[in-house]
Picture 1 (cartoon, rainbow, N blue to C red):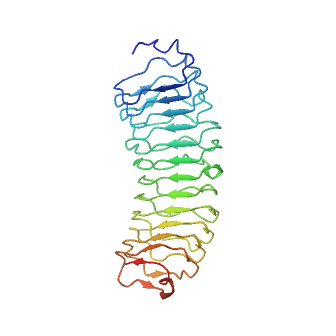
Picture 2 (picture 1 turned 90 degrees about the vertical axis):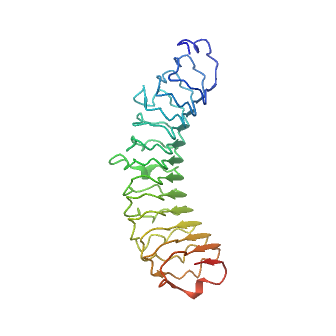
Picture 3 (picture 1 turned 180 degrees about the horizontal axis):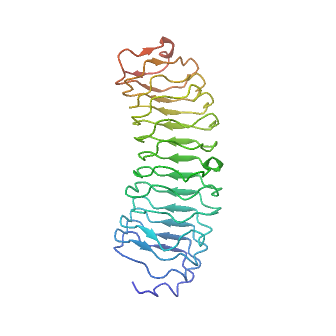
Length: 293
């Protein structure tokens, strides 16, 4: 593409080059009205020109640009109105500094499997609702002393199939926490203040063996709980989980007792398949739903 291709397109609001076999882009600096920049599946694209001048940009989507590795810019300060950043299934190694992106609601980094090990600080992303690093297999931790618990708008945190071993305190308004397939996870963060949590998935975490006794005490909105393929020996009380629909404990071979669940009247699926034959199941829980053992 000619370097000056976009110079006269000053009113362009959407640029979608998905699937093109381009290695680089012409200058974007004159696209002052651009809202959407979509470069999905541009499999030969390795780097992105400076985003300087794109102050109105709201969507930056490079998902599936499997050769993409780095940015020209060191921070996202040039795109203060950005709402969605999607670098899923790229080779991104290091993200620019987020700073105070007041409108950013979604960061999607699914399947960034090569070298992404840490994120820049997130603490000033006041509108962030979804952070998805599922399948970012080398991601290990958040920035030291990055208080992600202050992200009060965060609703979905998906860290499945990452190498995270321990989580910092997490935001109290979270509705979904997915840690499935986290092979290094050794303990859960405190869930005491997660009163809005609806989904908790820690399946396929082979090093997770112990749960705080009060872990589920306040999770009254929880609908989905999955501890399949873990080494947990005992579960905390489940009596407060009045909205629980699915309780999945497949192949929990170390589990010895299932706590009483008299108040769990809305349960639709209880899966204990593959558990130890010595598992003690309280008769009072098998009265209003199907059980799979």
